[in-house]
Structures are given as structure tokens and as C-alpha cells.
Length: 156
Image (cartoon, rainbow, N blue to C red):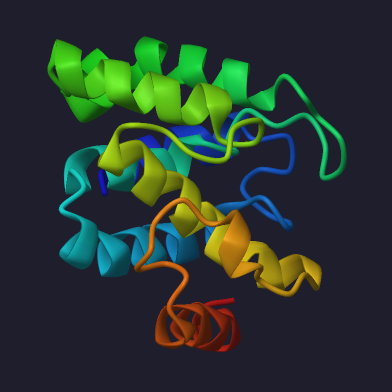
């Protein structure tokens, strides 16, 4: 991922990239997403951008129902200078960011991969991963859930 984009996102993040929804989480979501994309065929360019953008516009660590919409607007704002996604990829990224916390599934395998990459990191909040709430079959596999859990211990 573009290091300058990460720097800008940390500067804009309400805790400067620290905390439960900060850069450590973003990096794990990226790793989860790349692991899943190898099986789902999701677009890795979108998945990597989603990993860093989806929680970058949060205003707190708790309930923030508009953070997905703010992340979608941030993706549009920063795309040209930092990501260079074409119109189609940007539209997928915007949709993934906008609805990552209020929808369970989508017709796009890339969006589903993004959302599952994030959901697999819910272990950081003390949640047990519910395979029935994941959007892709591959994310629901016990080995994938365990790999995400192990990632939490190694990527802090």
C-alpha cells in the first residue's frame, strides 16, 4: 500500500492511526483480504485500499453509524492523488466502504471479500467469529478463522 496514503489516513484518523480501529487493524484486514482474495478472486487493488480506508474516518471507537459513508467520501477525495483506481474500481471501493458495517452480503465477490477481511478481525474486540455472518464460504472455513485469530497475536 502507498505509504503516503497511510500517512495521510493516520493524520486524519481521530486517534492518529492508533487504537482498535487504527493502523494495526488496517494491516490485519489487508492480510486477511489478501488471504481470502487468493480463493475468492476478489480485486486485490480494491481490497488493499478498503483495508486502510474503511475505518479511517471514524470519530470514535464505539458506535459511529456514519463512518462508512465518511470513508466512502474519503476514498473519492483521495483516489486520484494516492490510489489511482479507475472509475469501476473506485465505485466498488466506495460501495464496500459505505456499507461495510450495515450489510452482510453483496453480489460482488470483491466487496464480500473486503467485508469478510474486516469481520475476521473482530476477534480483536473479543468476539467469536460466527461463520454464518460471513459473506464468503472461504472466510467461514475453520482454517481461515484460525489464521485470522493467529494474525491478531503476531500483528499488533
